[in-house]
Image (cartoon, rainbow over all chains, first blue to last red; front, side, top):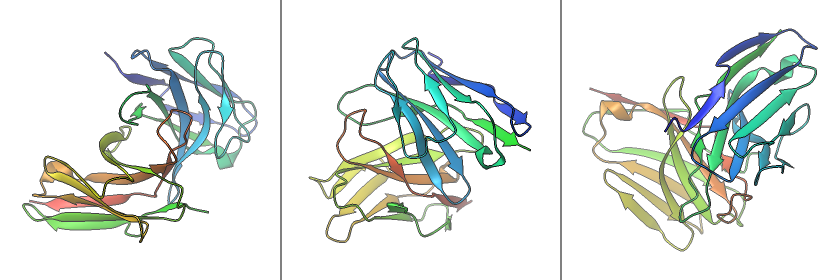
Length: 113
Length: 114
């Protein structure tokens, strides 16, 4: 199993450009999440999905959109990138069970100039 | 407002000694707590968790202690090994469904000196 994978690993955008980050998981997990990690801030939840076709806002959703058209994929879109969106983005997935263990991808480092 | 706080950005410990990482939280509704470990250029990986109905949970060299009255938890690593060098994140949630958001602390970088 590859677990949780993220594409791309690195990206540099100019202000105003758009892009989509792809997250894929092969564990048949119902729940998927997008976080951002900034220096001194820990991980903060952007959006999440409780199943195929559903999305919900997290702690810091402004400036991002998401889609979950297939159970295994969760897309994070930036329609008009801003320097404040420079961050490391992590995707995670989770399956309801005895423990609340989210499985994380390796991250995408995004720089907006 | 940071609901989960890790006030020590870094910690250095000699190999074989005990490492103690601390975490404080402000939301009394949190009832499940987790520790994650993160190596550079990798995503966080789950380490150990504890429910609010317990005050201690052990898994090999790792033990998490929870003091609900003080809203404080700690992770003990005994004995510490060089491979334990990483950033450790504390996280908390209200409930354990997938829709209960995790709130993370800012992390503590542990360096274990051989």
